[in-house]
Length: 313
Image 1 (cartoon, one colour):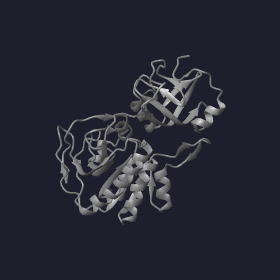
Image 2: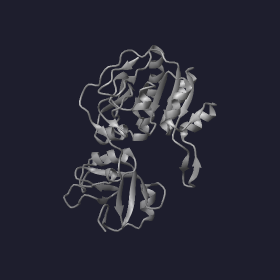
Image 3: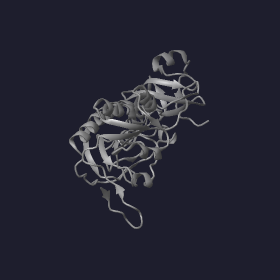
Image 4: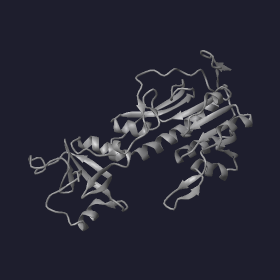
């Protein structure tokens, strides 16, 4: 089966209703659980395509991707060139956080589905979980979608929605979505790939986060800043060095914090004044050091009467 072509391009391959022989495309840790779920469910994993080994960790030792490690532990065939996916007689490719753009020539010959961690068409792109938290979304979800040549534009086979807790971190939310998505992927492939539904709604894009996306502006509200903290990697400056906020809590400040004498970024009794409300610091990470409980750090930091985060040097 094929999707009709446009212009001179050949049509894209279309997934069969009941695929069993699969090629799995994935690289990071979050792509391990779906692979394991498909393998344990009895699907025939003909091969696993993942990014090449690279230097990882503090020791910079060359190591396989988490998906490659999981595949080898299960005696699955691993390749690094996506074009080799055509060599195994697979009926379907399954893509989860692979990390590379798949060429049209491959999609014309091997139909593929993708497990995407958002409610499409909201947050198409590389960082849907983080962008949902930064935007203050109250809900997100997981979709099993057809892979096409656009950026997460394919029609949707299945979708499940969940609420976003006000204090959940991106790592925690990712774990929730991966667990749901792994089960949904197995269920969807087992029950049969019915006619997918076109995406409906406002389209937004989840670009990969930059360092500047996580740079704290203390004139923002405490709630907005805490969203950056929950995403992971939020940073400011303190005494001329970069200073990460690992865990915090947005609060409504009490007197004397709202007496009009404090300015955004000022540290007052364990809280940082913001443009609206205050941020209670729980875990921080000074430059060149590991995470530490804020109170333990404060006890040894010899803080002055007035200290301020985010001052330009």
